[in-house]
Length: 163
Image (cartoon, rainbow, N blue to C red):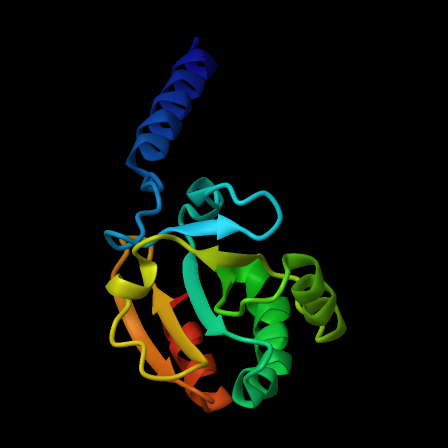
């Protein structure tokens, strides 16, 4: 009988502690932020970003500064992706998606590449330069802006601080 009460007490304590665990809130992009998948043109699924830190890089293949940043962005994705960083590359190019995907593959880019949604460029303003990178938390709050080409150390420090 003593074993039964001990087991019941442990089970009740486990249930209580489990109910105290924080629940992951849905990811909320800032109002007006929207991305369209490169290939399908459909909106990017925000559920994959739940509980994550988002790094959004606005780039163009014709921009030498954008190209200079790509290896560092690929390294950040590889290092911090498993720890909760979600990277999204917003292409501001007029080229065909297939050409841009080949270009990105050659640069080592493995994170999602998207087109900007209808109001994204209005919301992110001032978009003063290309490249331009924004760090966003799970609540949609912009934590940092990096006008490019960014200093890799600055972006790394911001990511590490907020993960």
